[in-house]
Length: 426
Ligand code: AMP
Ligand code: GLY
Image 1 (cartoon, rainbow, N blue to C red):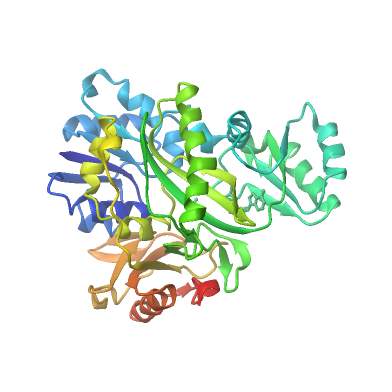
Image 2 (spheres, rainbow, N blue to C red; image 1 turned 120 degrees about the vertical axis):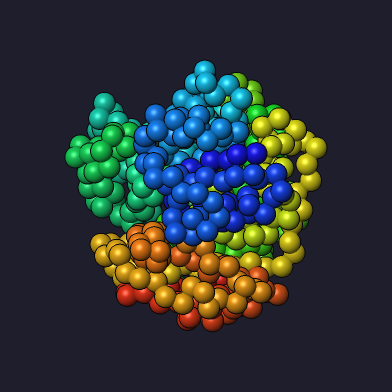
C-alpha cells in the first residue's frame, strides 16, 4: 500500500514510525513532514493548505491511503476534496469530512451535539454580536471562574478562564467586538468551570464501528507544577494511573457510545480519529472538548503502546470492519517529555542545530521530532516544540526518569523541558 501522511509534528513522526513497521506499507510519503519523518519515508514539500498540490501528489504517487494528522485541513474540507476527485476514486482517507470535523471546528456545534445526545458536559450559552448585551448580562450573573471559548479554531489559544466578572466582560468584548481571534471569535461559548482532573481518550471510528485506543494524560502548562501559560503540550503519559476499568467503562457508556451513536443518527459518516478531552470530577467523566484527530504529544505515548499493525488497523477502518478488530496494548507505562525552544510559547528563534540525537539508547527510548527540519543533512530547530523523548518504563516515575536521562544527551541553543511530567503519580 502507498500511503500519504499529512502533517509535520511529533504526532506525524510517531504515526510514520509505526506505519513503516507494517509489511503492508510499501511506500510512505509525508507532506510536509520534518527531519524525523524523513527517516521513515519521503517528505514532500507541500503546504497543508494547498489542496490541489496534495491531490496531484496522490495521483503522481499512486496513493491508496491518505492519513490526515492535524485539524486545519480537516476543518477546511481536505477529505471531501480528495474523495470527490474523479481520478482518486480508489483512494481512502482517514479523517472526517468537513461536517464531522465541526466537532473540533466549532465549539458551539460540539456543545449542541453533546446536549442533543445527553453527553455530560459543562452548562453553556453561545453569543454573537447580535445578542452581545444579553451575553454581558449572562456573564454578570455567572458563577466564577468563567470559561470563555472562541467558537472556531484558534491555534489552541481560544480558551480563556476568567477569575472575575470584569475580566470576563473585557475578554468577551475583545473576542466579539475586537475580533481577538478573527473569524474564530465572532461567536463565543461561555461555560461553567469544571473542577477535576483531565485525561484524554482516543477512538478510531469507521462510520459504523469503533475501537478504543490507549488513554493518555498531557501536561499543557509550560512551567513545572502546571504553572505559566498553556502550550500545545509539554509531555504525556499512558496509561493514566487513575483510569481503572470502572472509570473506563463509564467513559465508554456515558461519553463514547452516545457520541458514536449520535454521529450515526445524524448521518455523519465519521471515518477517523476522535479525541475526547475529559474532566473527571468525583469519578464521573465530563466532556470538555472533541478533537477530530489524534493529540500531540498524546500520539507519542499512545502509538508506542499499540501492538496492532497500524496499516491493518486503518485498512479495517476504511472497509468498515473495525468490529472485527481487537486492540492489543503494551502493558508497560510510556511517557514522553517535550524539549522546547527558548521563549516558547511566546516568541522564539529557529534554525539551531540539534546535537546528540544519535546517542539515544534505543532499548527504552525513541526520539520523535516535532518542530525540526533538515539543513545540509543536519536536524535544526524549526518550531516551538522541537522534539520529544518517549520512554517505556515499569511506572510513570521510571519512564520519566529514563526520558530525562536520555534528554540530557540532546542539546540545542535555548533548549528547555519540564522535568516533572507525571509528578502527581510519584
Ligand atoms: P481546549 O483549548 O479546548 O483544549 O481547552 C484548553 C484547556 O482549558 C483544557 O484543557 C482545560 O484545561 C481548560 N478548560 C476548557 N474548558 C473547561 C471547563 N469547562 N472547565 C474547566 N477547564 C476547562
Ligand atoms: N495536546 C493537545 C492537543 O493535541 O490538542
